[in-house]
Image (cartoon, rainbow, N blue to C red; front, side, top):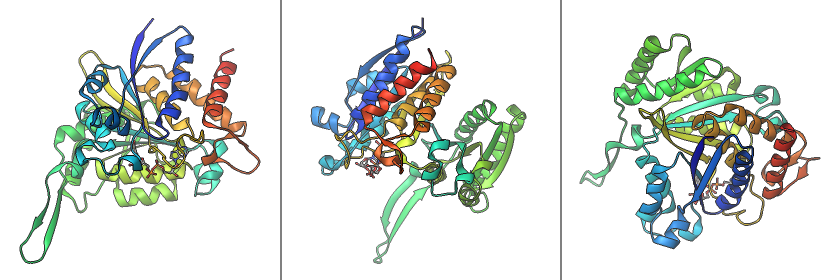
Length: 369
Ligand code: NAD
């Protein structure tokens, strides 16, 4: 029986509450007897700062590096607004992304039929929507040098950020997108601004080369990033996989997120390179933050966290049947009208974080009887 080692980092705010529900699902999966998940727990963000004075300890970093997958809750909150910059809660997540070399960020935007009314777009535009945005996460303008504010000495200052991409960075993120498209609906849209940016010209060229050399069975289209933002709102169901750089990915994935209704529904995966043994470092986390406004009240929606676990089953453990099962359980529970406060609608049943976990577990039992 395969034995996998999960490192759980619940973090701050609602992180521990939603992680507790994900852990019950992990136990359920282990209880089926086909696979065994060994979970260990660490501290990140404000919780780590309170215990160790840093956003993640070296010990926990080492455990994250050794794990088969890291499952991450959320970090931050007003309590830590004034801690030193290097120890701020987000520094823990950034350190994990950097040391695990997580260059590919996968953000699905799925609209469950039961929640189509929660979108800001009309039901027919979003019902059944299933987009995967693949964002390059470790390069581009957020990291390029020089990155500085220069005093020009004449009462003026100059702010500089540098957009840089090397061929290998574009090749590896393109391969992630094409591989995903092969097991989805076979279409990749690559998005950049080649009309005004040299990095966009190179992006277009490299993605086209990888496509021609290795993935001619997949359909590739190119779309300027501003048009892509517009098309996401105009006709989102035309998309299958979108691959784009760090900056445009940041924006386009947030646009896509809002098509689906609530932040509490959105999972994500961040993946590193595949090693010689076929394994890759990976971190799975909900898109939302630590929601300090509702922390400790049993109001948090655990579905983004549980959906992140589903992504771990799919992308780290090759357990797509179990991932599909979990997705079906979530869709059925929503179909039965159960809602946490963030997705509550007239005539539906309001449930707590824990009750939503209960309902998903009961549905899993029902589906596997
Ligand atoms: P947030 O995502 O925490 O919350 C935004 C709004 O969405 C809030 O009203 C919150 O109650 C609601 N919300 C979020 N997740 C929810 C869920 N699962 N169920 C129900 N409602 C949910 O963003 P914010 O308020 O801008 O930030 C709060 C803190 O989180 C800040 O310290 C911020 O830095 C941090 N943050 C962390 C991450 C991360 O850990 N990856 C991401 C974003 C923000």
